[in-house]
Length: 241
Image 1 (cartoon, rainbow, N blue to C red):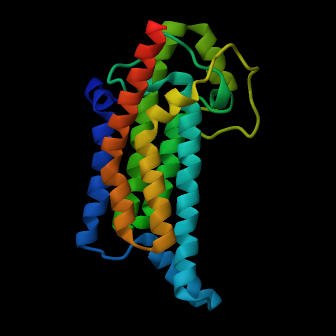
Image 2 (cartoon, rainbow, N blue to C red; image 1 turned 90 degrees about the vertical axis):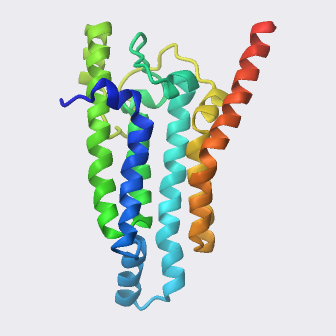
């Protein structure tokens, strides 16, 4: 499998942002979001009123975003904020609990769900960039991470690879539950920025005011920083106890 370089992995958050940034820059040549195009077509075909159809279309996108945030929070509750946000690659431990029993890379599957939702609010050329760029980059990152896990974990990880799908989740757990412990506060802290995206999208779908979506995107770094401070304070208190 193709693998991301060290530079790509260390700067993966900036790379994700670049994919979306380039996609939304295409509003300069196409001023209509894909979701609006689809809603207009659906409205004309079924003779539905335009505004409720728009709300339906972007409401679907909002539901996808909420589902992605929930999945990523569940997965991050097993990994922890430090691992999720670290620029370094962590392959010293095999996580095989929670969503990892159904899919090897639930965080990246959550990213693909987000990409689908965000493609609806991007113009058509931008949607193409998102729907090609995100899966391609996620597969490159997965290739790097799984090569490192194979090198460190050996046969246990190869067995896990043969049993659990890489990116498209199984509808049932493929392996028994292990000894992994989830920490929901830790997971929410790791995914605070993602929840900012999701809540901004929900507000946009409810009001059809795109500024809510942009507000959610703009607020995400601050919300993530605040969550990090809360998590750090919690960790310090636990150490003192």
